[in-house]
Length: 131
Length: 131
DNA sequence: ATTCCTCTACTACCGCAGTAGTTGTTGCCG
DNA sequence: CGGCAACAACTACTGCGGTAGTAGAGGAAT
Image 1 (cartoon, each protein chain N blue to C red):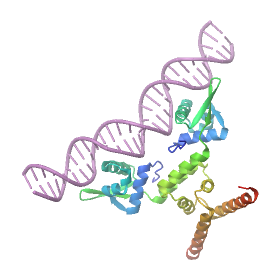
Image 2 (image 1 turned 120 degrees about the horizontal axis):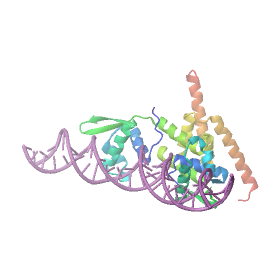
Image 3 (image 1 turned 90 degrees about the vertical axis):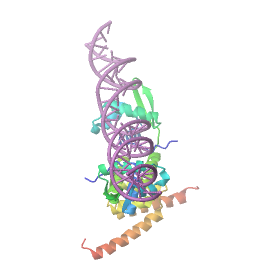
Image 4 (image 1 turned 90 degrees about the horizontal axis):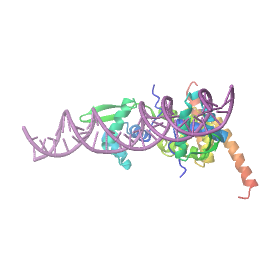
């Protein structure tokens, strides 16, 4: 059920704020997105719509609504990235990595570094834990 | 100018068909997207709208319109991926790769393989070209 | 030539993200 | 107490992707 596939720009930005802060009042979200020059009511409206969809929840603190993200970053990332990979790269995630390399967005060296780091983590994992 | 940022699902699918075939009549596109169960007119409408936006062009072949993609796959991929990375990963492409690994969508071994292949290609390149 | 078929053009409609005004409520401050 | 400031609720509008029906134009078949 928690599979928010279609997220717009603003909604993502709002979620990011909530993920960062944990909880945030409307005014705080608005403040964090000040560069967008949006009306406060716009943020409030968006938050309400997002609550309708189950993306966020709110509790009341005096007159204020304090919002909280319901969906996990991981889940959202997985869905959005999976979607893109499906649409653009025939469902092959490696094609995406390939693209990043060819487009010069990442470097081989970075890949190496990541590879080494993950491999090390995996070794540690295998040794330390039972399962 | 060729910076199509907001592409829907169907539009991407249509572009993919055009990229694959080079040129395609409306009916051909429709055929390739048969699994979507769309009316032929839907495809035609979409193609016209996409032409308005400069994504595709057409020439006439008798009665038929034969469409051709104007935008390059590379450009579209770059934009869409760049957008996603910006929205979801703070503009850090490596964070995306990291996500793919952690989410189990790609394996270390695949990364290794890609790394090796690209490195080899680069060596070949360096020998042949100036830079 | 008339009928029929095949295509495109025009038009319309739905849903949703995004944007914001207006209105209503409520607490605070002088 | 009366009014201002803050804040949420309701409402509305725009733009666009997606979807398709209907109309019109040009060839094909008889």
